[in-house]
Image (tube, rainbow, N blue to C red):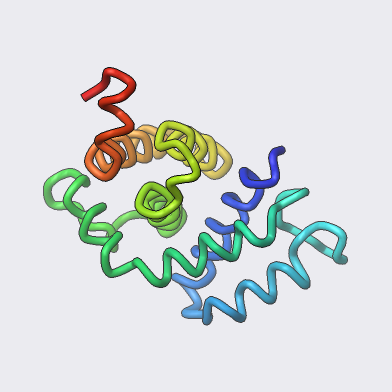
Length: 153
């Protein structure tokens, strides 16, 4: 598994933990890097995770959550809000939207595909379709120029 892919999966695990337990971002980063990343006894995070990228995703989601959540809410089916979505799915969407917003070093299509694959790591049902739908719509909105260059609208 590529280091950034592993970092994304670990970031989703950490965001899930933060969401449910209310743990501070720095405490979660420290816990994952010291205790959960491979090479530590009982390491549960994916092998080869890029710790810097992992940390950047977590800090970015926390910093931009007030911007991210309303964007996702707008893309969900009528009557659904992000707070009603499964906590893992919520973490995947938040991390994916953060990357679309700020990680312009990662092409939008790559970020979307990465988070669809992350969803497959956690779910076997329609959740990956939700991730694809939400991130594709937001990618076209947040990075319109990228899609126009590729002849997409």
